[in-house]
Length: 122
Figure (spheres, rainbow, N blue to C red):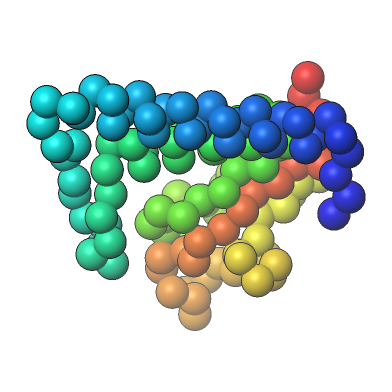
């Protein structure tokens, strides 16, 4: 994937915005420690993580027509949207680059995936 200087600048801006959101959460937590929950794999998850994740996902989706999904979804959550996106020229692939597969012979839960579009909406 070739990236232009403008795209790199946009990515840097998204990363800086996410970093600032993390700092804002920790600045607000000076009187008490930030709340920590744990993901299914028992790794910690803070409000700072959630805010930064949202900024990064929104930025990638808005500027690059990319939607990474690392949370749990099932076949019935994604199959119809995958079909519509595919007809429109996009794709939904697992992290190894293979298209998501559907059907009773597959696990009901999807692997982590990335949805991309090849068309411009702005």
